[in-house]
Length: 498
Image (cartoon, rainbow, N blue to C red):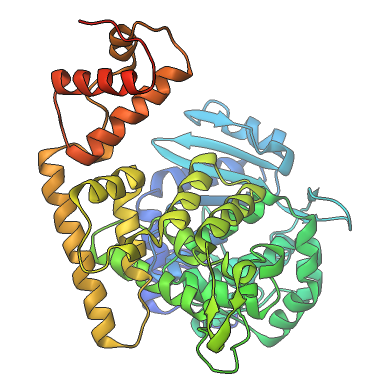
């Protein structure tokens, strides 16, 4: 049996299928470098009280992959009330928001730890909340985890490595395998099906055939999982290095119809003249290109931008029409798609600002294509920037990413046109605050000049002045007042003389 203890520690009898490499031993030891004293102290406290404690799951996996470790998850045979007793007077702060699921959170010397009682959790056929049962064995706790790569642990305080299900070997092979039967694992918690596609995108791991088959057969079990939990997995997938991979796995395994049903519907049949693009492949390419531009521009992974890139054409199936000459049209698909994207993201319980921003980007993603050869007036450019508002940089990226033509001449022409509009926006921005354009007169001044009180008429006058501002640029209060009085006279509104 290989010695799986970390340097300077005592081995334990758990069987591991393969031995840690020197690099992996150093990586795991490195996790403890930042929490050495805290890990030792908490481990000794539990051991002195006759309880087990181990670092488990994601932190061990990430350390072995050479990834930065942010979360410190621990597991123990002590029940939550006993955990609270053991950390009382030692932890700087304790919170119990997850205590119903056996988890106690604490902070010590600036580090945040979560300690969870050995457990198993499962869903009844119609339940949206897991039922939690406590266990007494580390091996059994690891057995109930989603995948073998997350079923490895390091015991505290002696820091011996525990791998009863071959997670280390699967880690090396970039495989997703369940500790037991995948049907049992997905039956216990169907969200693990979403985790499988998320890990494909996030870590580059591929489910083994039996996991893929179980996921495909049990995908409809996702219907009992709360929208919030699915949203959180989808968010992690979209912010991963390769969201396209995760989306493709969702479609291949029949998961997408239960999460983003509009996406597989983009696989429209090619028309007989082969003039109709594969909208699904196009959307994935736009997502890839948006991420490339995101990185090139020094942006952080942007959930709103990535969702908009994926969903920008979801209105096409509903708006598809076949016209004479074999033409296929999708009139107003951006308007329909904006509504559809907002409905879907709302159903997934995304925050209202994310829903609104994605919807707005989808609605605006075709606006640039009226730019032509640069005939837009300055007022049109102002409107474009003002309508985009705080989403302007994201709209720049989305619009550029939306060019997937293989015609190099056409692609180059589109790129030059967008270079031009960005330069014009930058020039006008130096002269004006384009993202916060306001009329030269505010509501109070309008009321004073027209001699009216608050009401719809003020809004109507405000919109008139805003159009003037967009058309002409800054006018000044005196010129704006003259225009307002002339407008009021034409409207039959009696405006007093100044």
